[in-house]
Amino acid sequence: MKRGMLAVLLLAGIALSLIYRDRLDIEQLRSLVEASGGWGPALFVLVYALATVLFVPGSLLTLTGGLLFGPVWGTLLNLSGATLGATAAFLLSRYLARDWVERHTDGRLSRLREGVEAEGWRFVAFVRLVPLFPFNLLNYALGLTRIPLGSYAFVSALAMLPGALAYSWLGYLGGEAASGSEDLVRKLLVGLALLAIALFLPRAWLRLRESRRRSMPLSR
Image 1 (tube, helix red, strand yellow):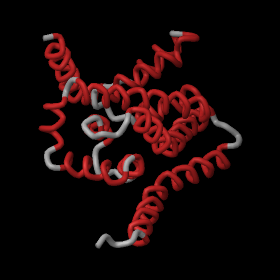
Image 2: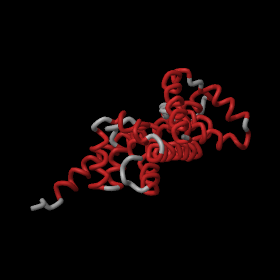
Image 3: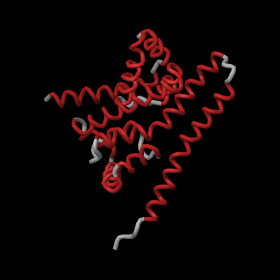
Image 4: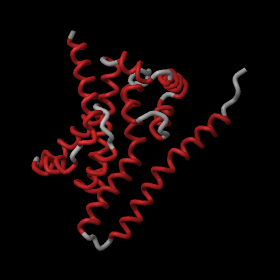
């Protein structure tokens, strides 16, 4: 009974977040974090994690993290929030919302299961880097595979790191541009380089994966 009630509340939260996600007010979040003082970073991580569970797009939050906390702390806090939220969604799917996840992933769930069975953590890294699945839905879908929680969380964080760093830097760059930073050109070039790396990695991983497949001996 309790599991059923929790599932209903979860689905209601997801539905509301999808309906009202266009009303996400970054300025209000910024004011709330700044007003929280020393608790601001922890509050931001919790908000990011909850947003991930409720299917709120994370790119805007990642930019906000870079704007509020700078490129280093912003990356760390963004990655912490995304990993915490992805892990929570994984656990909710595995122990609570299995039926709902199976309905909304259609036939793609069998591909995920087969991929994890065949490649383990490498497949998780692959689907994290190459956007075959929407990020938030992928968190839930992977909860129905046999990947261990520890491997899932570690590989997810590692695969999300380049994007978190690039978007955190871009958010930081927006704040620097607004304040008239003297070193803006150099920081812009660094941001573009980080973004290029984040966009290049999926292609590099695809090539590595195909090369590994071709080098494997054919089964008889």
